[in-house]
Length: 201
Ligand code: TYD
Image 1: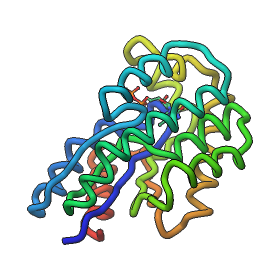
Image 2 (image 1 turned 120 degrees about the vertical axis):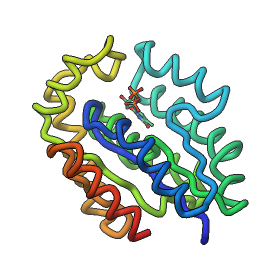
Image 3 (image 1 turned 180 degrees about the vertical axis):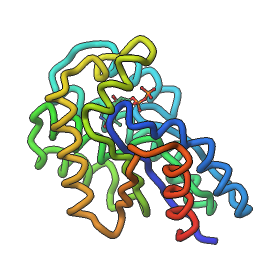
């Protein structure tokens, strides 16, 4: 079976992390190697950048550049070699998050993200992106009952509304790649929806 690059996206609190072990299991059951990773992060340097990105305040363009710096390392060290040997790569977030958070919510010009995307990815795109979608109130309610929030999780409902709108726009613009999962249903239903997407790969 050919290598596939699968990314998971959604607002904080949409519940995507809950499904990662299930997705790994579904893919492993097909007998393929699965490389599970995340952004920002995925490499030693990337995890150091993640610590800065999640806890230090900085200009939104600095944030964008650091996201792509981490991504460059992630592609070079993890994603490209894994795809080259035929593995499935499952990344908890990728460039759609930069469109949603830095461009959509923080006002960085989308064109600058497009330029960095061309530079850093050189044509590499996910094969499938699962977007875990929930109404903003649900995300905010889940976050307020969760662990100590990071910089992004402390933002307002207005900020999350922009993120959701930006993600849904990305999904409309890339209908072949995006699979929008209604994550505002009982866990078993979300599981079934995810399973259907993975089965259809
Ligand atoms: P997240 O993936 O939600 O991890 P956790 O579940 O451990 O909190 O956290 C990563 C945060 O980084 C999230 O709030 C979104 C943000 N982010 C961006 O703003 N831009 C990006 O390009 C990426 C990859 C993440």
